[in-house]
Image 1 (tube, rainbow, N blue to C red):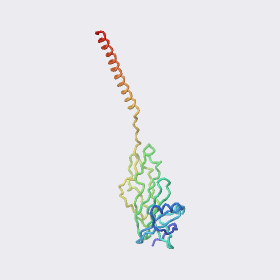
Image 2: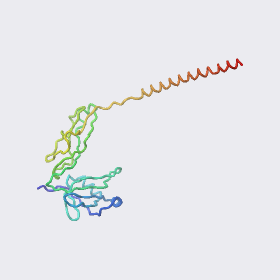
Image 3: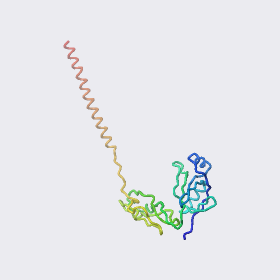
Image 4: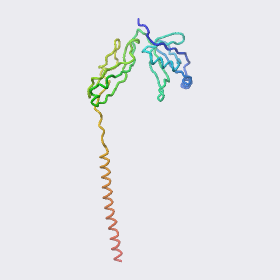
Length: 231
């Protein structure tokens, strides 16, 4: 039977509240959260924001959650951050059975990009998929999955099939999903000559109109003089 290897996190129970209550809680330096799953009722809690940051920075996939005198293994289900400050405003945790595999998402990190022939030739490396869904025992969930792209050539398309899963980890996503591409740099279209050409055409048009106007102005006095002479 697997044993928990998680980092401990102590939280305090709280009554479920709306957005106003959550804002009041955050003003005191705490983050609201909910833990659910495991065949039990959801439990709302509050945790010190600084303690939460430290725990998440050093924790693995499994966290030993201490609440109301008991300890249970959990994994991070969702974390919501403020769009401007980046501070955590809410956290969801999921109870897990360490003997049962679960599905979760992990970050994919590309390494060796600066050594890739396609990049050295000026190609643009774009990571299309930044996270993948995997299935594993809670204690086998990696913090991230690395993939070496140092041999990628220009116009290469790398799919999830190229990822090497750690022992005990299974990829759930379609292996044909694009992970990254290396494409030639996009050429910038120079628009200045076109603008200059349009300016010249406009100038020529004005010149023609000016000439026609001058001719018309020149004809008018002549006719007027003829009429005056006739009188």
